[in-house]
Image 1 (tube, rainbow, N blue to C red):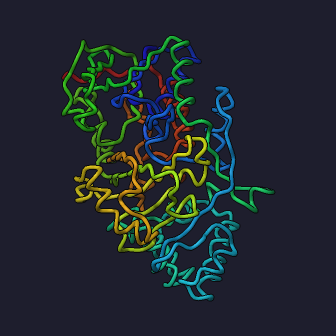
Image 2 (image 1 turned 180 degrees about the vertical axis):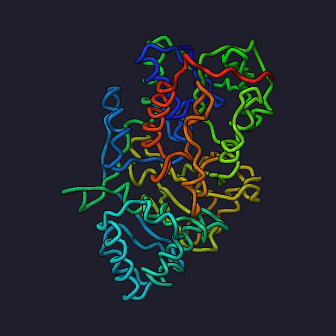
Image 3 (image 1 turned 45 degrees about the vertical axis):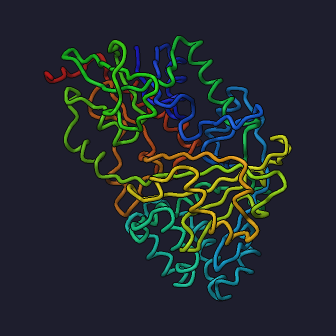
Length: 466
């Protein structure tokens, strides 16, 4: 089959690679002039690449690790993590159980109760489905108490989910606390995080090499503008002009370019709203499937990457969760507190992470305006921080970064099989109960191929007339 794969993120590239292994001919269409989706890299100068959005792996992330071993890329470096909470005007270490016992924003009783609750949850071995009917807020208040909700979990959930914080399913938090940390032996005593040297880019370039060697194509800076279906069941993809990424994410804003191409099948790895914009009525998608796509909400990732002066360090930690409700960002990830600055010729890099509701005023700011807006709050973390610490800055926005996993979310997840033979949808809304990321996107890409090849394509239904 000739298969159009929409999106050159992790799921799209893996799907195309697996298709070539089975003798099919994938053609990948990608809006961004780069590979890897939210794990795409940025040339920061000096021959160095950094991911546009911060990334690392857990030792339990076997899908991506196994893929790296299969592709022969790496090595993957595993290093101890260092995490902190910024609350009540101070960054406090929060990596080990002893750090929790020292966490004075909570009473000793609350600290013990919180630690016991997490430990019981991790050891209970109950399936995520047991937690789907309850909010995380209700579970935390019942099992940990009001203090941990007010000082830790409430601010974190509000930072990530905004006004929907009280509605988030306990199933989501269960996954965060258990599914990514199924550790044994030494790993259980000290969490290790992994990073592929020298960056994520060799993974994506090697996948492209394998795809092209198998007869496929990867076209970056050329998204699809429309997907339709002819009466005989053939799919038609109308490509958009190079440079369309400058017009945003919505295919309806792109300028069509080149001749429409025909395909036997389509795997779309784009967000729900993008898929809805791409989908021509001739596809014949059922109303209940379309309703699932419209029901799920997303929040936007706004990531500011700062290069700091080589002798400046904001904090001693790799990852700082911000639990201060007055601070307008949710996380500080100091990449060069995890990997030594010498990797980057002594340069230092800091990510300032945010998740925002659509239409938030911060999304309208340019990079310099955002630096200025964040400056007094970075000074709360380190009073010595000043604007002249910033050597360079880059800003990235991803509107469909974080699905809002509310109670009942599992009933709204769209299936990979769209109900149209030959058409598969695979995106982060279907990564459940785990949290979205590169690891489970590998699995998603493979599942998309399985879903496609399991369909009786030889007995396609006839598409309705356009």
